[in-house]
Image (cartoon, rainbow, N blue to C red; front, side, top):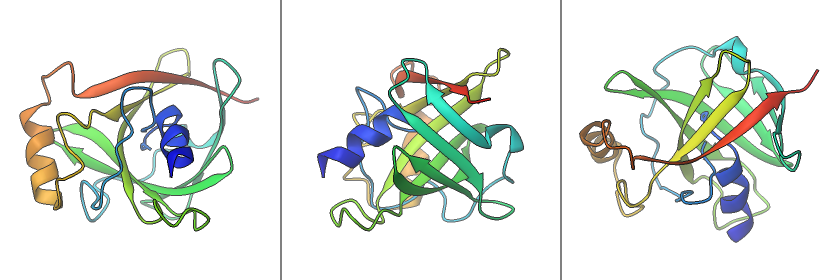
Length: 163
């Protein structure tokens, strides 16, 4: 059970989120932020990415018009945009059937592309959005209430696109 949490902490997103997936966050949730994607796939997120320290590999592919497929250090995830209050979060669903404990669970993250082309991923802090939150409407309400809170997102992971 611990392995997917560490993997996701390094990701993001979000991916959406592709993200999350960072040192202080990485809580596993039972529900997505939104049941359906809120925007189309952004082609800028697609490709092979490596963390700046070289330890983490992530491949982001397009599944369909609205969904991403992520392979994060060999583990499989599906991600989609879940906008809340104008902020583009990602609902990231664990699709890796080798870990029954986290299969079908969700991670919440924010992904941003910097001007230098690096991908910055952060997970939502589970102290502000606890894993005991059992429905998507409550998740969105907590996220919206904390959009201005600097503690909403955990540490940042930075990825460089492979050439």
